Length: 116
Image 1 (cartoon, helix red, strand yellow):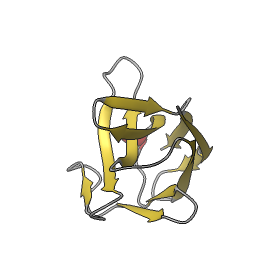
Image 2: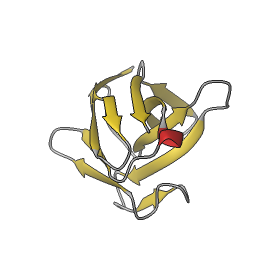
Image 3: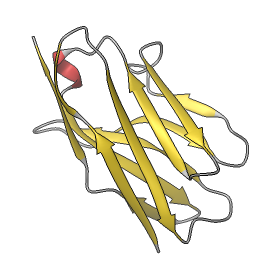
């Protein structure tokens, strides 16, 4: 099993920045990827960004491109999502995700609220 511990999140004003971190523990091995999804009230969970642990390629959702930066620390099995120029539409619960083959692991989620 894999455990994901998220930190960060909170309330910020529009235009400001916020950083989310996620640390993976347990059976963290093999070829996997880590990243973030988010879910706004009344909406489906959507992809934000992901990084491949083996090939170190990073991919972003269109809304995140240019504003969000995902980085990883392989030694600590952590990922950090730096979010800049936040807007009210970025308000959501952000979930850390680790995918390995057909297995998906999720964090409990952290609330990000952006006020206008």
